[in-house]
Amino acid sequence: MNDTGLGLTGLDRAGLDRPGRAVDIPASSLEEMSREECGVFGVTGIEGAAELTFLGLYALQHRGQESAGICTINGEGTARVRKGTGLVADVFSADDLNALHGKTGVGHVRYSTAGDGSAQNAQPIVVRYAQGDLSIAHNGNLTNAQQLRNRLVEEGALFQTTSDSEVIVHLISRSRRETVEAQLDDALAHLEGAFSVVISVGEALYAAVDSRGFRPLVLGRKDEGHVVASETCALDIIGAEYVRDIRPGELLKLEGAHVEELRSLPPAPEVAPCVFELVYFARPDSNIWGVSVDRARRAFGRQLAREHPVDADCVIAVPDSANSSALGYAEESGIPYELGLLRNHYVGRTFIRPSQADRDFGARIKYNPVKEVVEGRRVIVVDDSLVRGTTSTSLVKFLREAGAKEVHFRIGSPPVKFPCFYGIDMPSRDELIGASHSVEQIAELLGVTSLGYLSLEGMLAAVKEYGPFCDACFSGDYSAPLVDVEKGLATMQNPPGC
Image (cartoon, rainbow, N blue to C red):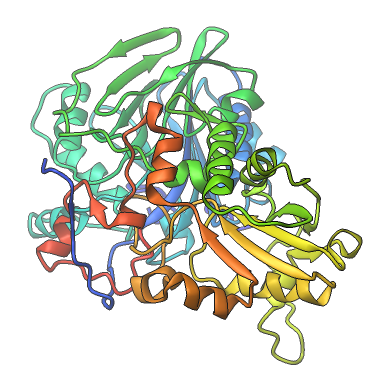
């Protein structure tokens, strides 16, 4: 366990609108700021906020496995923070949670996509602030973070992390507006890109979403208080009632049972929630933006079966994120769904490697085919997406070794051709197999009998009643300006994206 301590000293001890258009992203460059995909959680007005936040983060563990943190605020407005690297269950002990008193809590799980992955970038970021102790948990990527950071440094700001989230803290503290609410509004108005943030100032909790609504954030109610979370699965685990999604551009103030809608941010030309949340990132038992993630993925699978039918004996999923899409494919095609691949959920952070180099090692410890299901059969394998293709190549090899007669690969989304800048882990474009190879070439590299991707039109049509959506990683149409890239302040050789 990496204990970064309780209490605060300055920054906490852990280190502490244009229409959418295609942008030509260079295949080589390096982003300086730390980009991250995350899960956020906040609670106000409920005793045992630390325990509730722990459970909420546990449900959001799929959104980040690199670090976790909880900050609670007691009745005197004093913040205490505990965070460290690793999984939620590894970072927090019972003693840690018992030491975090208060009815208000802010939590964060993080998976950085670039930059320093050490504990200094773990969140929430906690600071002493003129209006009281302030903590912030942020999900998303600011596309003008480097521009803002450079300006702040010139003005004398001192940064202790490489996270773009720290930029928000400095903007709040330097605002000349009089009230907390006005200072938050002022700071958020300077941001470009994707942000869903939870901020505490004293016992008050604030929640905000960028004007395009890239990342989900939901509002719930429990007892005499309120909860905000990246997904509804975090509400379910603590028995909170779903109230509604926090709307694009909205800033809310929550104090116990009271909810105040503050001034909204300037509207964007078009909302752009991330369709990749539905394809892969969100949990299937969640509802985001009014969409059941499971039902969306089943719709993708049904459309995939219509676009790429094949005569086969069974349909299997690459577990777990493709389970729903595979069920949809089976429902539409009439081909039986089977458990042909099993996943080991207890891999953790292994450091034991085979004595002889094994290119398939990473996939081998995670997946194993059920020989009795695939042997001598024509198998349709459904996956949610194909990014680099390395794991898929290994899976096909395992299925062949288990005796599969034919392996037909079906992907429940279009080819990923562009890096994401709005909060999803995507490698640089030269690492994306869909950006440099045709479908026929990919099929040959994977060693499959046939390969079929869901079309972009088919994917969007499957969820059209809930759209429009951001599809930049598939189309290259970036709806929010890439300020740092366009100004030459950041190069994206290794952007894994947001």
